[in-house]
Amino acid sequence: MATIESYVQPRRLYRYRSTENLERELDSIRKGYLYCAPFMKLNDPMEGLFTSSRLLRKSAKYRDIRNAIRDNKAQVGVCSFSEVCDHELMWAHYANKFTGICVAYSLSQLLKELRDDVSFVRMYYDETVPTVHRTSKDPYQLAKMVLSYKNYRWLF
Image (cartoon, rainbow, N blue to C red):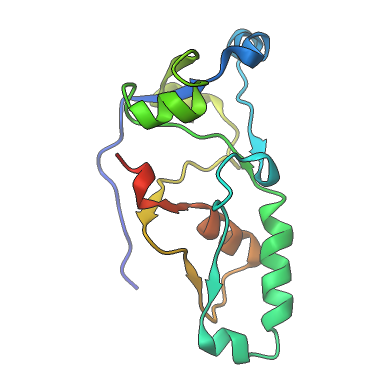
């Protein structure tokens, strides 16, 4: 099977943050950790939505697969980054209506310092929610796939 490879990585990643939790943000910088929000705490109500293919809906395991994806979404912590520091929509939504902060991170340092089980996933922007098909992927991988989609309006 063919693979997708990426030879270019951004030098910096940015996190838009509200100053309502400024002490937590400063503490995370001082102590070298990243706050990863649980799926249910994300502010986009469309986050994590998905549809199932007709073949999957006819499958005897349909309900089990949907429930497993739902349960696994609850196990994924999300720490959102941007590749740009001047995105107005990000400032408006994630930095408390332009009153927050934008923290820059070196991607190479993050990759060196974070645990091996941490994944960086590039978001896929589309006007439709993802479709889950009959697959051999485990529910955790499907949950991460579902959470890697955002509405195209968030792109730029």
